[in-house]
Length: 439
Image (cartoon, rainbow, N blue to C red; front, side, top):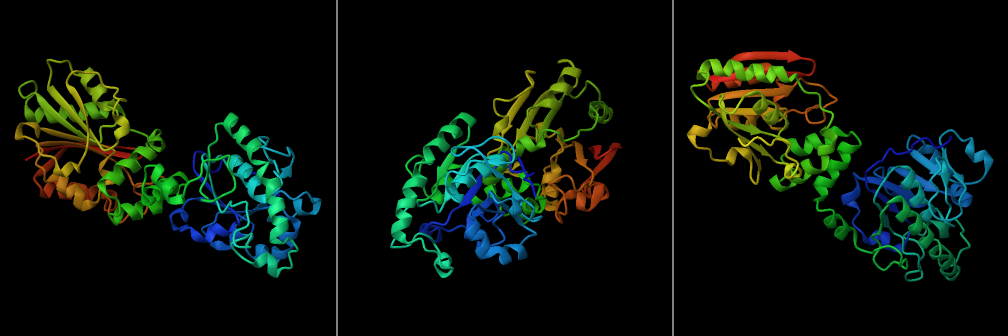
């Protein structure tokens, strides 16, 4: 089967598991939910290894039946035999450029071994950076692999001969790095003690720490990128995130939100209009607090619509995402952007500042109990928007604690029980919006 999986890991980190003796000295648990390529026998470490990669015919013959039993998973190779190109459960790539990184789709630089050619595979998958594990490229304690399967299969390659082979492999690393630099691909070798000197060496733990994210955040970010929404939902539902981790998580996945459909802007203005009927148009300048303000897009639109002398005196936006700092699109002097350093419900507002709480496409990130806590903060008026239940939205799909699991009716009942009444309601497509006032 010709290779047709280009860029499926675009923008994600790929971890390549080699066969070096040091591999078993590493706790691989933190990458069980990451993008992982297993070279040769490393594929058999568990079903958390996403892709099998090999290039040696001898290895394929040793494990053909086992691989066939796992043909529901992704098994790829770059062996030159024509008959292997026709096996329907094998993803085949052609060996072309001898060294470096081959950029043509479906083509691979062999680089003299399966392990180093796997770097080229990760490039085709769109991964960046690429992290290497078990790439010792040397014999350790008379062992050339973390396992002895090859010896059992009658592999004639002795440890002494392997040492000579490694010298050949090591010469391929600089051409790979040269191409990687031209392509903007970063390669990190998480194999302490490795004989490869071309790439920076650090432990896996140190690398994960250098990402600035905890293993849980990394797990959830990678899950969302590959559209595994349940992993994120379960972590959030079970309150596994600390507040700091949640901030980092939101920073990482913010680009995924750029295409979220919004309700028509005129509906937001209609909400303000209805609330003004109850607070007295022009008599009580509104102090607006917005939860989940983003870069101030809505504030900018509303404030530009309402002149300075009209009904809005201040608009304080709050967001958990530090990426918003410096990206503010609202230049109105009434607007103030604040990055939350603690949960919103722990914020203390003066009574005169509790005139209007605006939350657009944000409450669906909270559990039902958290939503109730927010409503109990005592704001006099609310403008609330939520998406209708849709499994394309990763933050509500299948969740059992989010507002939308009980539906808009749930929110209406809770708000009513807490003394609010709805004065404006609008539904279109995948969103619903309402304006609420304290009775």
